[in-house]
Picture 1 (cartoon, rainbow, N blue to C red):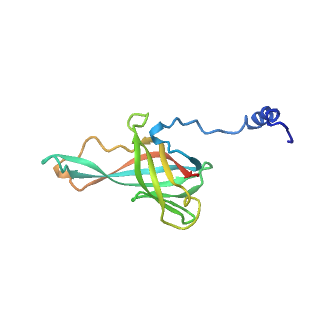
Picture 2 (tube, helix red, strand yellow):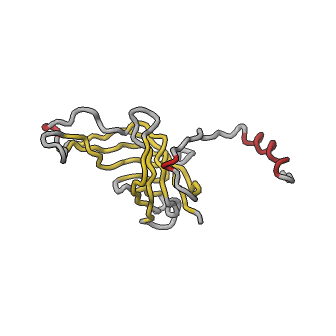
Picture 3 (cartoon, rainbow, N blue to C red):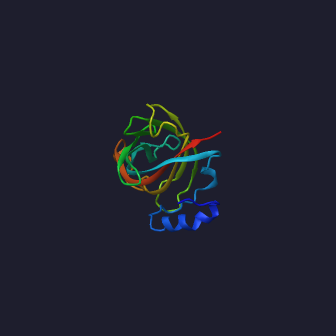
Amino acid sequence: MNCRPLALCLPALLAACAGAPMAPAVEIPAALQPANTVLVTVVAARGVQIYECRAKKDQPGANEWAFVAPDAELFDSSDKHVGKHYAGPHWEAADGSKLVGAVKARADAPQAGAIPWLLLTTKSVGGDGAFSRASYIQRVNTIGGVAPMQGCDSASLGKTMRVVYTADYRLLRTYP
């Protein structure tokens, strides 16, 4: 298609895209949107959030389910396995690139019973590859994964629970 000016091409481009599947638009809270970034990729996580029954530090005699780590497999938009997500938190691509993240901001998930949405700053701790250039990760579209509401009594101290969750991780790169 050779269209000039671009405005003349727009109807043809829209028609060509009409049959293509589109991911639903995600409205991300402003607190989770870093400035001057572009989307590198989106990976879907399917796995568990691991919790351990522990004594509360600030409340003698009380217990709570404390978050330990995620354990999830990562998939691209065609459902191809592309990596894993685990304690650290780390995101590791099949090509050896790896990120470690630190929470910068959080927002309640729009869906009840889902872990919060997050913005994490990242640092590359692996080889060059698919994940190595990301500066931020947004965790959005979460389902499940919240700590159990019951079952953490004195007889359960030290026991772990694996709670199923899914999420989309949006890897963003900073530009000048």
